[in-house]
Image (cartoon, rainbow, N blue to C red):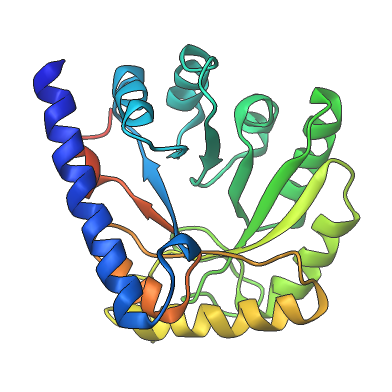
Amino acid sequence: MTDRRTQLAENLAQVEERIASACIAAGRKREEVTLIVVTKTYPASDVRILYELGVRHVAENRDQDAAPKAAACADLSLTWHFVGQLQTNKVRSVASYADIVQSVDRAKLVTALSAAAVREGRELGCLIQVALDAESGERGARGGVAPDGIEELAAAVEAAPGLRLDGLMTVAPLSGPYAGRQRAAFDRLMEFASRLRGSRPAANMVSAGMSADLEEAIAAGATHVRVGTAVLGVRPGLR
């Protein structure tokens, strides 16, 4: 455990240095960017070590892994983010532990999340996942709504009991006009985010950037970066 703590502390320090340097380069304050550590495939013991090292935001992408992990760490003051594609049959479970769902991409999911949040007596933060590789009316290869669907979905979240519209999220696309152009993709997301904030000032969260491209996301203006591998190490194959 001591070796693992040392490893995580070193990795976290390196990521922190990258974030701080990116903020300086972008003329931003370090406190403008929140680090979310994506702990998928790693045990609750790692989450506890990360908490001891100062991490307060963690993310998961599969409910079957996240639910028991969140339960095992229920005594810690953590903000849990759900970042994976979410099926409606998993919504009730996710609503019991997640604080923010970053992958809201269709009206049916909004309805299900609202019902589950009300049942749990909780308010769920929601980010609309934007798919920059999706045509009008379609979902992206990695989930997400096409850009022209943002407004309609934002209105649905706003009107739904138990839900709070927090902002936008994207995953740099692997295909389409933004493939391999992370900075351009994140700049485009920021345009949509600025438009959303124009009518909904509280929806000011922009989640973009991962281990390989967090600098580009910070340069574009992201408020949250989702980092897994750079902190926890190369993942074993998904089960």
